[in-house]
Image 1 (tube, rainbow, N blue to C red):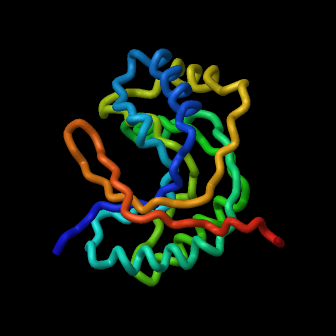
Image 2 (cartoon, rainbow, N blue to C red):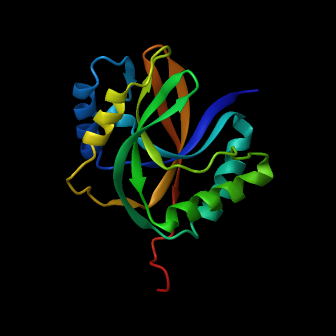
Image 3 (cartoon, rainbow, N blue to C red):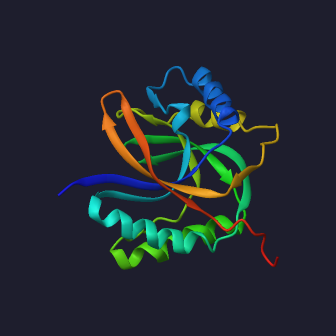
Amino acid sequence: MTRIRTFLALPLDPVLPVRDKMQQLQKQLPSYRIKWVNSGQFHLTLFFFGEIDAQVIPSLVNRLQNAINQTPCFTYSLGEPGIFRDRSGPRVLWLGIKAPAALNELKQAVDHAVAPLGFRTDDTAFHPHITLGRFLPGQKITPSLYNILTETKSHQTSPLYSAKHLILFKSELFPAGSRYTPLARLDMDSQPPNS
C-alpha cells in the first residue's frame, strides 16, 4: 500500500512581495535560529491530510472539485507578520492574510467535502497565513522579537492576489527541506456571484 503525505493549498503568485518581507525579517532576526521557507514554496494551506493511501486520492480529488467549482473566485491581500508558539517557545514565523468571508466559506466547503472520507479538521480556529520560517527548538521569545514584528508592520499596500484554483500537493521530507509536487489542480467558479 502506497501512502502519500498530502495537503491542499492556495498557491501564491506573485511571490516577490512575500519574499521581500521574509528577507526584511531575516536581516532583523539574525540572533534567532530559523529554518526559512524556500520562496518557491509559499502557499496558504487549507487542509493537511497527512499520510493517506494513494488509492483514496481520486475520490478525494473528485469530492474536492465538486465542492470547489461551486465556490466563486475572490481576491485577498497580505497582512502582518506574527508567530505561533507553544510552551517551549516560538515555533512558526508567518505572514497573515487579509481575506474576505469567501476564504472562510471555501475552507468550510473543503472541510465538508472531505469529512465523508474520514478527514477531520483539527479543533483550532482557521488562521489563514503563509509560513515564512520555523524556529529551531530551544529558543525563547524576547521583547525584542515582538518589537521587531511590530516595527515590521508594513506601511505599504499589498498587491491583490486572485484565488482562482487550489492545488492538491504531495509533500516529501528531505534533510535539505520539503519538496512539493502538484497532484491535481482544482478550479473554482470563475463566474462572479449573482451573474
